[in-house]
Length: 98
Image 1 (tube, rainbow, N blue to C red):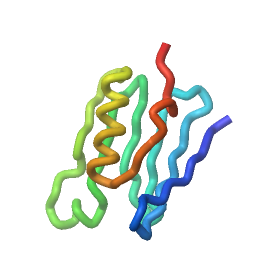
Image 2: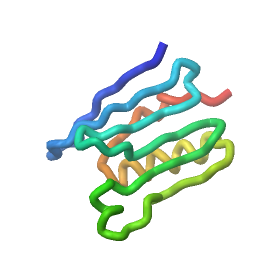
Image 3: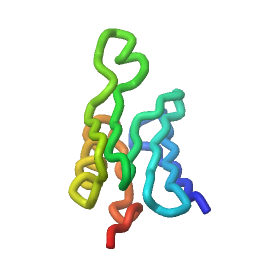
């Protein structure tokens, strides 16, 4: 069963939907403004993206993207990036590693 968490950062009108795959290996972070701002996958790495509005002004898509298997260090990096760029704090135990 997929898990869903809703987060609204303090002082923000935006709401973030966090989805965790049924096997606990992938997390997606989507914004109420239509942006898909992040994905963490144990198998495919990190995708942390700028908003579409930022990309349309000429900014690149990726804030922090990797394309290789990810572990606990990458999970911390992903969570740190979400906090830094979007003021979104994920529960540290949302993804578990053996």
